[in-house]
Image (cartoon, rainbow, N blue to C red; front, side):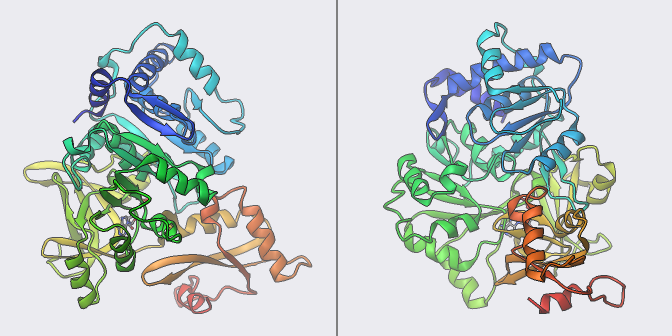
Length: 510
Ligand code: AMP
């Protein structure tokens, strides 16, 4: 598959079909293709010599997609940044990427002297552009197509580079999840995740590859449940893509059922543990709708395995007292369980999940040190592939993969990927804190909340006032979902024999 060619194809055979629907605005396939062709021609002329990635800043405006495609058509990677990311974190990313230009579709942020084109500029450029980009300028198979930044343990996000080939290989598989690609043509796809998270690649590009219509969920809708349910009713979604946590949240209202989404065909889940109880509720509320669990990290283009969760499978896992599997690998991928020496473990034995195959990233942008630690190359099926150490613990039974937690301090909270040290290192930026240890509160295998234990200068404040002040100040440097629910002042952080913070002991204090 070549996603850019697929979009062009739909823009020719059905140019008026809506590609993206967001709030009150929408763009057809014809507009999406034409506008991105023009913007690409401008980018190519204006910044000819350089192929530096472009930062695309905004939220769910359809022009975000015009910018993404324009970058790809002009041979550049794009780096999506959502308006919900604190300004300082966005600026850290700008510093890392050093873009020639930032395309700011939405939001208010001071890019401190960088070359910024706002939506009104972008619209003018598109209107005035007379050239159309030539296909020879498009990103090549091994070029970066996008760079998505994800939580990094140093306190600064790291940019995962995904090539054009990775994306196309991923789409060959994702377009056939639950039903064939042809069956999805013209269908309505639901989007939940901001475009700065790779889960959105599953809805956005699978939809565009099938000639479907993407219905985006905006921040405004997510903040007002009434609006959100109204949006579901209006958009008549056929293919649902979200984290399990988001579906759980929607199920808080009994109205969230087959009557609200009468034409729903499947739920595609990814990003965190899908529990038996979530699927039981979905089967009850949406009889006949397929529930598919997929697994994978941003570093291997969204997802690499899938399994249809049938009632029989639910019963079998309930009887065995096991959690749900994450499935079999997609074609072109090997999922192996390795021990610490890098040896492949036999079925049933637990080790680290290693992903080898044609959707594995080339590594972290500008961070060869981190890339070297997490990625390696190996030969499978007579060909050399990139391989990735997921840091996930797991095992296989009958060729089926089971996820069983992490071997490091990364967690998933409400579907968001967080390196615990990312929070701790950012907390240390506050002058009143001298030591911070963040502990996840885990129930039924899922992280429910985070608690930070901190030492520092109370300076006349009560421990409660101290905690409240820290949470408030963290809003400037961390995304909301990374701010610990509780910040507890303690006089001293307990240490274990290795001289490290005793996380186990602190976990007992939750
Ligand atoms: P992200 O890069 O944000 O997609 O996060 C990737 C991580 O999410 C993986 O390494 C796993 O730890 C976790 N994850 C993804 N999919 C699943 C799943 N289906 N079940 C359990 N954990 C998952």
